[in-house]
Image (cartoon, rainbow, N blue to C red):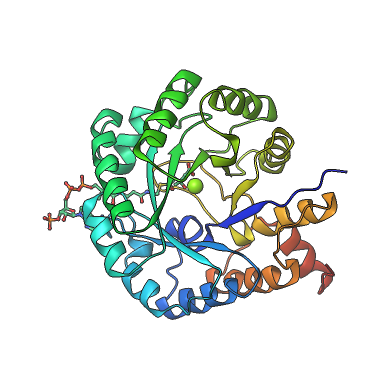
Length: 303
Ligand code: HMG
Ligand code: MG
């Protein structure tokens, strides 16, 4: 049997809420993050320091970070697109900075208003200054497996983007299936291409579940040696600048899978489901998490 610990990166408070129609109050976000902090998760991406006109749902980022109760052993991270965002992130004393860009020019432009070539120097200066301020830095590449505007994205382009980000000194690289198009064979192709030059323990997988392949892709990446996985509690998520993107793989569905495989995650499925129920009530719509639906249908769920 496969047995090795995986690191779960909870992105629900950021990716999960950034595209939600129902505005969640600062108080409820803080209460939810505080609950998540008690589940055994060691990493929570709590918000984004982006322009509030671009992502209105996260306009209260500074208040959220200042009001949460930080638990020892939990890394609190936030998305940062540029120096202006880094200033706020440092003011909030966030633990980890996440820079982000796409592997396709059109999505990059729609998302952060710059071409890919214009973005590299911006991120290089953010990474350098964040490191100088003693922060760890995560890098995201979006549209790794397909772009909502350009369709196919070449592996060469992904490798080039990944190598540029690694050269900047990021500590971890998260590969985004932004619109949920990947299948396990593609996961294998991309990971094999990247690991010619990038150690596999630097890679994380960030999948959205638009076409129902997310968990299969997680399992495939696990089999290939990836040990870092992003998820959003309740299966929340989506990028406003990627039309048609569904939510992230539900964190609790990944935990259920890894529990069944005998792989340690340190996360309590039951407590995670409590936090899924909490946010489900706040957003007020049906959410895609299978384990949440199973709990709601049965009234209970045993780990
Ligand atoms: P811009 O309009 O090009 O910015 O937006 P600018 O540099 O030209 O500045 C214009 C004004 O914005 C200035 O203010 C700046 O100070 C202000 P003014 O002088 O006019 O009063 N400004 C800011 N304000 C607050 N925070 C900032 C900031 N930067 C500039 N950080 C910008 C460029 C990057 C800001 C904008 O495009 C933006 O905020 N984009 C965010 C998009 C986003 O968050 N998308 C979702 C996250 S990515 C994702 O979901 C994918 C992922 O999950 C992985 C996957 O699934 O693949 C990570
Ligand atoms: Mg995402």
